[in-house]
Amino acid sequence: MRRPSLMAGALALLPLLHPVPAGAWDKQVERGRALARSQCARCHAVGRMGASPLRQAPPFRTLHERYPVEDLAEALAEGIRTGHPTMPEFRFAPDEAEALIVYLKSLER
Image (tube, rainbow, N blue to C red; front, side):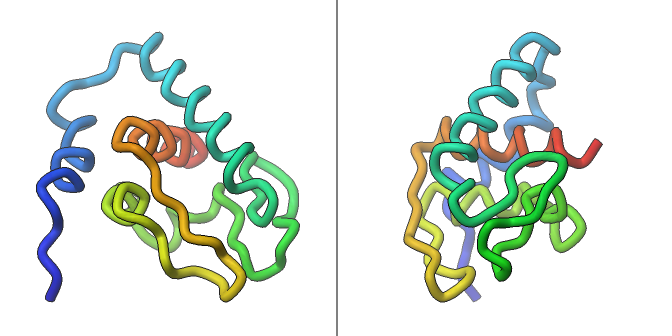
């Protein structure tokens, strides 16, 4: 069994340890949305509506139905190497991964 990295654990716990003020939350959501649009929208539906351009790529608004999106923190920071066969590897800086997770969390509402 693989042990989660310290960085991934810190990323996952950050929102729980320090509540994010509404204005900061909104900025994180916007930053995450911009990352999703620029890095992921070629294959995934990244908004609240619409189909994914690539049928195998799940819409981002449904990811929380499959698993806690916080669980993606490690994969986003260390590099996603899974998904559909044509998915390129992505690696985000820790602050980018956090912003993308905040955006995914915003889609749960």
